[in-house]
Structures are given as structure tokens and as C-alpha cells.
Length: 217
Image 1: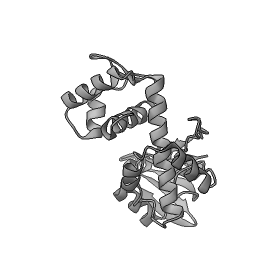
Image 2: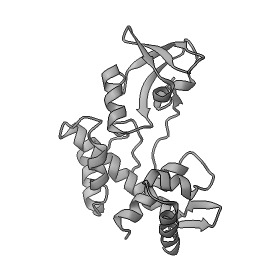
Image 3: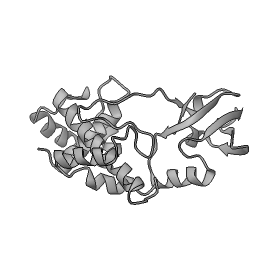
């Protein structure tokens, strides 16, 4: 069994490595955890002693198979709790992340399986992220960042890669929520901002925002 802090580290390493086969650097972990690199190194050594990560000084960190399974289980719990909070308790999608951060550490496999069944085995969380099943498997959906679309391309908003409350509230204000269809009409060369049409409404989106909106073309 891992401590809450150890679980948080495993989850961060997983998120940093999920789309990248390269080792995760301690500075990247420190930035996500908002702590010092020296503190990260101390924790990584503890995780290595538990055979949850492979760590070589100056070469970064990889999750072991055991560590990856533990991380995916944490992610599964987090995303299931987010679905529960939105669908059953009527929280908004920008309100659930921090609460799920606490609930994800409840260590009861039976509770998680009953929660999954109660929610009718959801495939995605309220932000569009895939939910692993009890075996750690999930359907990978190919997404394209809005910032990578070309003029005239159309797509469906399927997810976001930034889960901060401020960002999600901003999207909600713009009307850019999951399931909306959009068409990219203009790309500004100067700053990379884009103009899109959603439900016959023109919306301007900065490059910083566009790179966190995930589209299925």
C-alpha cells in the first residue's frame, strides 16, 4: 500500500509519460508537484525501493509494471469519482477535480467496482478523459489539438488537457463544452489565435486555450 503522497507521485509520473516513451525528468515532476527537485529525488528513491519506479541519476524515471498498474488504478478512481460528482451530485465540470483528488485515495476495490457499476460503466470522465476498466485497459481515442487544425476543418470537442477550474469556467463562458461541433475559419499568423464557429456563433480563441482543447475530426 502506498501513502497519499506516493500515490500522487505515481499519478504525476504516469500523466507525464502516458504519451511519451522517454524517461520523466525530476524537474518536470517538481513543477507538477510544486516542490523542490531535491524533494522529488528523495521520494523517487523511496518509490524505487518499493519497485514502483526505475530510477537512474540524471537519466530520469520510468514506472515499473507494478507502478504503472498502481498509477492507472488511481486514475481510474479519480475519473469515476468525477463522473459521480457531476452526474449524481450535480457538480459542474470545473468543480470536481479537487474533490476527486481526495476521493481517489480511498482504498477499497469493492467500493470502486460498485461505483463503476452504479454509474453504468462510463467510458469517459466529464472532461473527456478515458476511464480505465478494472483491468487497467481503456479505449484510446485519437484526438487533435484545436491549435493543430487547419482552416476549414471541422470537429467535435471530445476533451481537454487542462483541468484547472479557471480554464474550464472560461470554456463554459465561451460555450466550448464537450460534444459541441466546431469549424475553424481563421488562423492568425501573428499569435496563433484562431476563430471558430460553434452553433452559428463566431468565437475567438487564443493559441494557449486552443492547444488544450481536444478535437475528434
